[in-house]
Amino acid sequence: FSGFNGASPPMNFSKRVTENGLSPSDLTDDEVDHLRTELAKMEEEIQTLRQVLLVKEKYAADVRRQLGMSPFSSIKQNLSKGWHEVQTSSPYVRTRETVSHAGQATSSALSNMGVAVVCLFVSVFNQTFVCTL
Image 1 (spheres, helix red, strand yellow):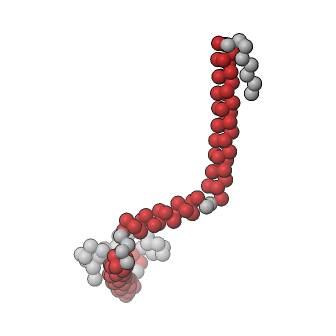
Image 2: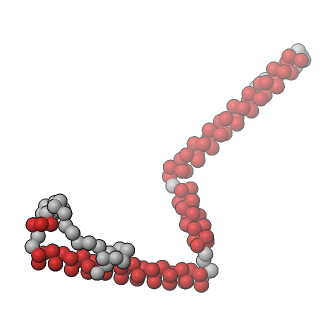
Image 3: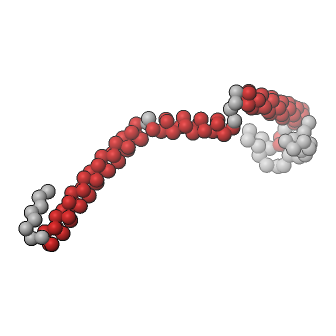
């Protein structure tokens, strides 16, 4: 059997304690052989699953290409969907309404302040002009 990089890893057990509370030296030869066999099977299954996943990813990419979907269009679609979900979320709607209200209040206050400044200048330069807000 082979490890992740294709080379056979050394199977030396140290004197440290394993997760099951046993040190590798407490294992019988049969138990060590059984564990090595299980590990080999598991690594082979993992490799098979990786190969199957790679084939499926290639097939999905081919189907997307046939449908005219590029990786960019897929990303664009995901971002668009995500942005729509944000815009329709309750916190976003409440924040937007609060900011809109604050903007209207600020605009009104600045408008009133502008009228007051104009009135002040007019009254300084023309004593006869009466300005009311």
